[in-house]
Length: 622
Image (tube, rainbow, N blue to C red; front, side, top):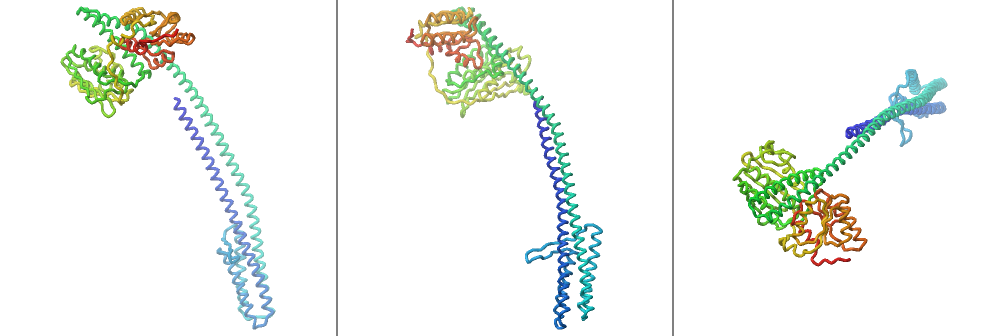
């Protein structure tokens, strides 16, 4: 809707611009037409002035003829021929002027200057007068030529010549006066027309400007209406965005709470299962324990799938770039699935490229998650005595992985939907094999976030092959860690503050801490944790995040204040959280915590924290 209003506003502005250009064009056209008309009248005036000049030339020539006639009458017969010849030249000149007036032509004023005359029709009366006058002049010229060619002399000859010249001068003066009259009349007409044209042009300008203003006002109103609509649409969009943000926050809060509420008891369940397995030797009881553990892990996997999918959809999942040992990580992953494949009598083959770099830089957790999903699906959908092959490689800066099986396969028409959320090849698949339908969706999204693309080759009855390649960098190889017993030998007797409100988790963590011969206190919430820290010194604090009275972040801030106020040596604080959303680590670090562990707590990760933050010869400043 917003875009529609913007497009309409753009069209209105275009119309306004076109109208403006049209107005300028009309004004320009009118100016061009009126200027052409005035120029035409000016040209007529100039032409008449040239005609007047020619007629004045004729008059001047007639004056010269009169003088030459006087000279002719005074000289003797032997000199008579010279003056007769001069008179003929003058008459030829007058004839030339008359020819120019009749047919047009150039009049040479000086050796370098000449003017042109073009015969034009001005009015029937004026044209008739000119024609008659020119005819009389030509008749008088012919009469003069006849007199000059005769041998006549004496007073009668002189009177005939003078009478003819006088008649020609009168005719010429009439022409000049008529031309002057015509020039003045034309000038008056030009002045009148100029005023009229200016008036027309002014009216046209007023009309065009008025039309422009009127149409501009209409378009401006439309633009204002559209602007108001756009503003209203923007406000509506902002409201919707705010609602979406609030809904997203509510969703994130719900997921965080759900994560905490489910992971917290699962942490205790899985922890106690591990402890029971270590102490139990009865095969039947071990089988029960294994069933409980398998069901708990399945439940944890479903929760993780839902949370991962939600984090990906809300852009809350963060990809890390860390060093990892290629062979060790992939071998450990493969070992996890050997037992699962063996239970189903499925042959699992692992092929790892021999010349792969020993260490790479990427996100090993997410890479293993993708491969684990692919292996889990392959084993799930492969019948008994089937085959599953995992191929790991490295080529030109890319980590490659391929999982191939000879299972049921996927029809071609279903392959386009296989990576969509909550989608499986058949609706009966979920009922038969279980699962959320999110595994491949999450895997595809993770591979994209890692810089690659998850691809599929499959034929029904012939199995499937999922494969991908992602960009990686060579990393630093880390030597194998020592066993848990030797790793934790140097932390015996160290003091730990466990801050946990869940009784089951308190019991589980107590057993773990006792196993490592650590001395520990338990605080049931943040308030109790601050009090215990104020009264004692600890080597490490394990701080739960969500607790009544005072949460872990606020408790940590108060502990840091005590350290600063009493000038104590800093006690490392490791957050224990059921949340695993993007930005959690930054939030904990910003609050002053040193690191965090997600629930269910992994013993190896816990030992890693012990070794990272507890040194064997740590001294305290009282």
